Length: 179
Image 1 (spheres, rainbow, N blue to C red):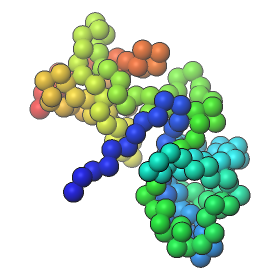
Image 2: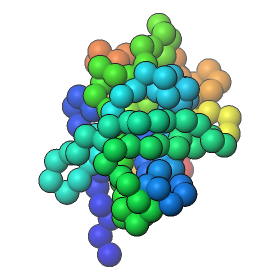
Image 3: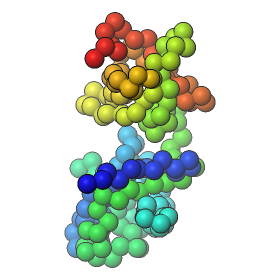
């Protein structure tokens, strides 16, 4: 069984995953990948639905939040069977449609693939995975030797993220990088 590799597009951001149908008229339940789902309910006009060969524009008729999940009604999906067939598909948006960030904010997709260095610029590895926990995020860092260690986003370990150079600067505590 092969695992499908998710493609990271340069000007698109994965904003949600279709998790199934909602009702019988083609509405979709979408798991939002944002900490500000309300912003997109008010501002977004369309998604791009990833397909085997390219994208299909999904024109939003309504987008609302119900129990932390988006309920999406769109012109392109008119019945439950079609909605069921779209399960597990990614919904993307153009980066120009993303919520503007504050000075100390970054998008998680910018951190994945970043190099990790200490304050003296010593290469420690690369962020290969971001794990969401109830208390924040944990970055899985793969060292040049292939071993991995975990870096919590909360606390004093992460010093800053340089988005221009895609570099995460940390101050590792003793024992952090030992397996």
